[in-house]
Image (spheres, helix red, strand yellow):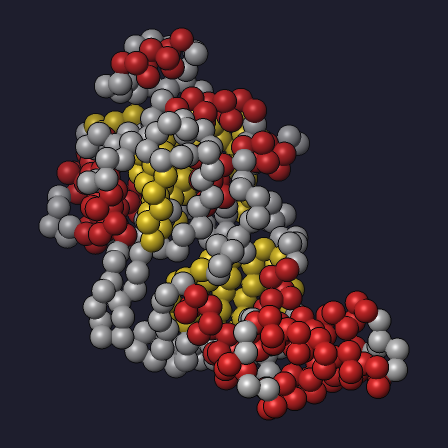
Amino acid sequence: MREQDFQSMVDQIHHYVTENLPLSTMSDEELDAEIQRIVNERCSKAGFVSMEERVLICEQVFSAIRGFGILDLIMRDDKITEVMINGPKDIFIEKNGRLERLDQEFESERRLEDVIQKIVGLAGREVNQANPIVDTRLPDGSRVNVVLPPVSMKGATVTIRKFSKTPMTVEQLLKYGSITPEVAGVLEVLVKAKYNIFICGGTGSGKTTFLNAVSNFIPHDERVITIEDSAELQIVGIDNLVSLETRNANASGSGQITIRDLIKSSLRMRPERIVVGEVRGGEALDMLQAMNTGHDGSLSTGHANSTKDMLSRLETMVLQGAAGLPLEAIRQQIASAVDIIIHLSRLRDKTRKTMEITEVCGYENGEIILNPLYVFEEDENSTLTKVSGQLKRTKNRLQNDMKLKMMGYYDEI
């Protein structure tokens, strides 16, 4: 069947079903069975239509009524990692690391907004004229950002970061060349020794993916609290795991639960580690205080262009939460709380690499002292190269420090 004829039949059956069936009283199973009956009847009259085409017609009609329309077909493609909808007529995807525009489009702005309301409603959130921006997720965990008109000038805008069906592992990072076996060993030691690790990078650099991978090093008998705007971490193998998610304010402006609220609440939940998906503002102060009050081994991510820039960003974020705090006190807090900063980047060839691993050694003469351990060198090998490879900072964790010394990661203690 020609593509034009195929789409015409989908549209005709969709129109017939919505106009003639009591959709509000039908279950999904009843609707699906009725659509199959109508499709088989129409296809028999139209001549030869293969079984594959009949199944596809049924799926598209059902999806347009009870699902997410053309979005369902896009989300089934495992090679697509990101979906960008700029109004009903402009749909772009990232596939195999490259952006491309799709031929498909939504029937109307109203249809796109119906799909948005379904997505947002499934996660128990709201998006409307009074609250036109929302972060949410799909049932499979994919991260979704929605911006409605008039904030979005071209119509409703939806950006979806697809959720990987298989959690990222260190073995996969090694396969992709993001880290080396030596670095993987160092990271395992640092996580198990409860070093506070901060992962930074630009948008799409793989921060959450990397955080998922290194979280696999957390011992399975520990109690871990994860805190996110939209739950997308895939920490596996931890039995005592609590996942917390923020909540937007309702239509009357009440009921909001922020990252700061969740961090404060998590401190009363007897955590051994706190994992914050991403810090963007004043919650950085609460995160640092948690790291400084006996919750070693905490992990988090943030946006920055280098490990040094991440320190500046942390200073700015802390000031958002405590404007009157002296800069010297903030830097001392950061130097005391954060042990390791890992910087990730997306290179020109669309690959994601670990660019730098730096130790935060302490605070002296108004500056935070850094000790670069590994840096990425874009030579014929294009890999992480050891700079010092030796940790300089002695922490007040004798058992962990002795373990690190025995493994050769300290010159002396």
